[in-house]
Image (cartoon, rainbow, N blue to C red):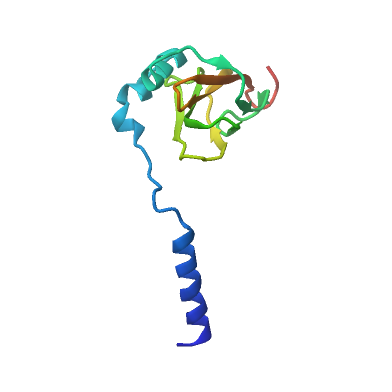
Length: 150
């Protein structure tokens, strides 16, 4: 065995020992099918969390005030809460649910995604803690046509 193969094999062994063995993804499309057809944010929250009452704060939502292109709007959600689930909703498109994340134990919540808004609308992020409490943050994003303001 030459040195290059030995190093490659050694790095592969190290990488597999570092990767957590308990990573799994929940398919919310099968477990909550009505969630993806909800046309209002409150309906989607009710379907996912069983409640619509959420406390403002303890979660940060970063989105632009004005987006020149509604097809690629950057959204960042972060919090120091020990949350078990994080969801992003919007009220500008026919379906309100954008994304749902299952947070692993002791996971760091600092998610960045790009979403699409058909028109000006409010983006809402909701985090659920282990004891079932909901915290949310909302941000109005104006979508301009051709970057002309509006």
